[in-house]
Amino acid sequence: MHEFHEHEHNHDHGHSHGHSSEDEQETMALIHYMLHHNEHHAQELGDMAHALRDQGKEEAAKLLDDAIKQYEAGNQLLGRVFELLGE
Image 1 (spheres, rainbow, N blue to C red):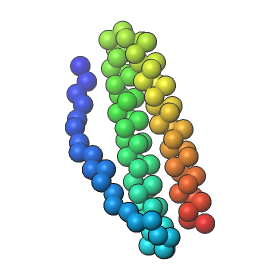
Image 2: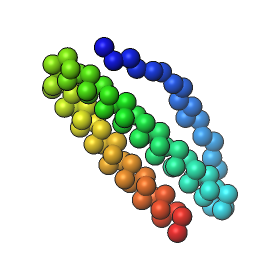
Image 3: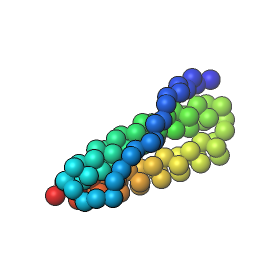
Image 4: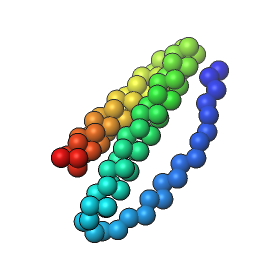
C-alpha cells in the first residue's frame, strides 16, 4: 500500500480590498503559492491513482485521473492570472 503524508494547510490569508502595488504583489505571491501547492496535490493524486491501479481499482484510478486534469486546468488559469498581473 502506498504511504501518504499529511501536511498542514494554512489557508488564512488576510487581505484588504485596496488596489495598491503592495496588494498586487501579495496577490501574485498568493497565486504563485497556490499554483505550486496545487501541483503538489496533483502529484499526490497521481501517486494514489497508480496505487489504485496496482490494486486493480481502475475505475477509481480513472476518476483520480480526471481530478488531476481539473487541477491542471485550474493551474493553467492561475498561471495566466500570474502572467497578467506581472505585465
